[in-house]
Image 1 (cartoon, helix red, strand yellow):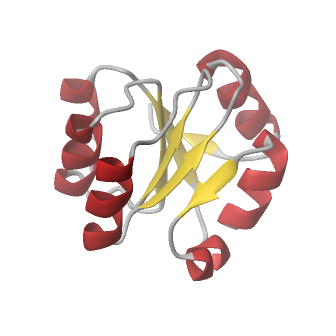
Image 2 (cartoon, rainbow, N blue to C red; image 1 turned 90 degrees about the horizontal axis):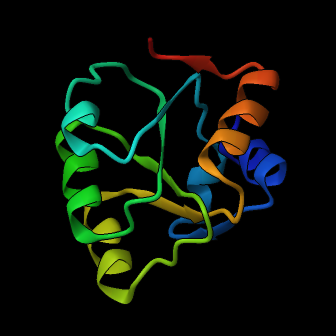
Image 3 (cartoon, rainbow, N blue to C red; image 1 turned 180 degrees about the horizontal axis):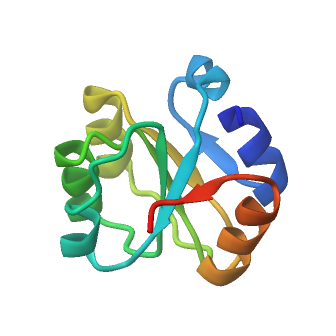
Length: 114
């Protein structure tokens, strides 16, 4: 599924390179626990988290995750936008709960990691 479709399904707001909206994503992983995110070794993954801070981006970078959706109405700061741009990470904001966003994506065919 293209990131553009994910954005539409979750009514998300996008921050970053809009060309990345054409990228494909096959898997999603939902977690606020960054140590769990570090265990992800899958390509084409979308991270859903409510942990809206620089550490979540550093973790995404180390895990080669380039698509991050912040759920529960969490807001992306200017520092986060800057770091994401430097590392080629597309950021999105979504007002849905993590449970609801994950369910919508699962129903639409996005595969879970575990």
